[in-house]
Image (tube, rainbow, N blue to C red; front, side, top):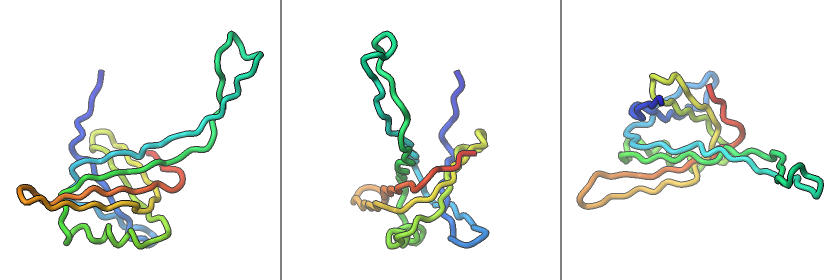
Length: 137
C-alpha cells in the first residue's frame, strides 16, 4: 500500500490577469476538497436483470474547497476581497510535490470565519464553492 505525506499542499490565488500569475496563500494548515459529487437517476424497472437496481449518471458538481489557516490580516485580506466578487476567480490546489498533481478550478468565496482565542494563534476557516469542472493534472 502506498501513502503520501500531506505536508506541502499549496492553495494559490490567481491575480485575474491573462496570463495569470498565481500567489500561494500563506499559513494554510489544512485543505479539504474539492468534494466532487454527481447526481444519479435510478433506471430500475420491473424487467431489470436479476432484481438489481440500475442507475444513470446525472449532473456533476465541483463541490467545495475548505481551508484552515493561521490568519494574518496582512496576508489574507485579499481573500476577503474575493467575497465581494460575483464572478468566479481562478484558484489552484497543488498537492505535495512528490505527487506532481494539481487541481485548477474557478470558485467563489462563500465563507470566511476568523477566530482569535486569547490562548492561541489567530486562525480562520475559508470556504470556496467550485464553479464548473475542475481541471485535474
